[in-house]
Amino acid sequence: MPDSHFEEVRSLHLFAGMSDDSYARLMRAAYVQSFPPEVELIAEGESADFLHILVSGAVDLYAEWNGRRTSMATVRPVSTFILAATIRDAPYLMSAVTMEKSRIVMIPSQDVRQVFDEDGDFARAVVVELATCYRSVVKAQKNLKLRTAQERLANFLLRQQQRAGGAAEFDLPFEKRRLASLLGMTPENLSRTLRALQAYGVLVDGARVRIGDQQDLERFARPSPLIDDPAS
Amino acid sequence: MPDSHFEEVRSLHLFAGMSDDSYARLMRAAYVQSFPPEVELIAEGESADFLHILVSGAVDLYAEWNGRRTSMATVRPVSTFILAATIRDAPYLMSAVTMEKSRIVMIPSQDVRQVFDEDGDFARAVVVELATCYRSVVKAQKNLKLRTAQERLANFLLRQQQRAGGAAEFDLPFEKRRLASLLGMTPENLSRTLRALQAYGVLVDGARVRIGDQQDLERFARPSPLIDDPAS
DNA sequence: GCGGAAACTTGATCTGAATCAAGAAACTGG
DNA sequence: CCAGTTTCTTGATTCAGATCAAGTTTCCGC
Image: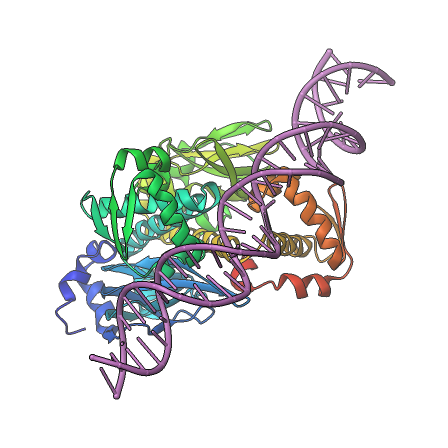
């Protein structure tokens, strides 16, 4: 991988602790590729031939069944996706599509598994990464089962505001239809739910969101670190 | 852990590959305990002081928010639970309660983390375990987001039938109220949905279920390995 | 075996959210 | 810059599932 993204990837937690030797082995087999928006990277059910690392851009992970489709998560740089399938040598459970122009490092799964077998430090880094992924899915499921659509949206907006540095105004990070799917509702219902949150000081104009009274919205949303905190 | 469950636990995938030395280290610190039904083992939000291994009985993992409660998963022997929190040294995301009389091995988290740091084989086994857990939660989320209550119930019954060796008749493995919560519906709705599945040959009497025409039920349920297969 | 408490069922009603159906607004490519 | 497409919004309607309210059955301890 003769590339300027070398440093970014090397500093990923997943690779930070491993030996230079193992890292070199991984990167020798890897290659970087640039994709335009809306490119299908992987399809659920396929075998996991590559570990993917998103270096820049954004990727949507989604799943389908019986003609229905739902967004499962959004991947932001710099992070890996479909690590579990790679390790288990099992079929992907989700499909992946670029949301914008994206640069992606791909490492053949067999190389990942080989280094994994030989380098204990790498194995430990994979554990931490997987444990984090696992916990984030558990949180997503709690969000889905314990909250109404309004509550999910309100908490999403609060988290988004945090990511914007606490500013009262910010832009939604992607299309509303994708947001709706991510939150487990229809686009129509998202529209209505956004208006319903006016009652708590939320004002929306296009992709621009203004949170008039954060306290008030929080009183309604009741964010919990055990659901909403991406770190913990 | 001077106990007859030694062999069962040792043969767990998680411990199978590690050195006798590391295993002994873990078990020296461990202890076994027997709990009656309905005992709260852990509460979400607490710090993960012990890795738990269910040797016999059954445990319900559930979560709460804002006064609402939902079952997240059922743990059956022999398997570990809350491994991710132990590794990450993070608070539990779920509470655990015994569903019946249960024997549980508890290993102090710090010992697990120490052996994890020193024994690469153990670290690798943890990875495989975590990857499996991760994939099972992803499947659960797909189930929840892509299927209606009827479809979730139909697929649950088919899986249950499989577990019963394909027999046309079998017993539900736990209370209906817990099943309802697990499937993301109310007990009332579960009752009605069970009756609705009569249209596909499902007959229920108490906890006893009879699947009259498996083909017919499958045509409705459309089970998919990427959601319903616990292994893949 | 009896009394009380759960768990379960059934019915009536209500409500959150999906669907259907048009418009309005925004983006896209020539 | 404009035609065409897609996204977003809004309204009307439908529907799945929740809630409320009784019953009924099952379970459990004395």
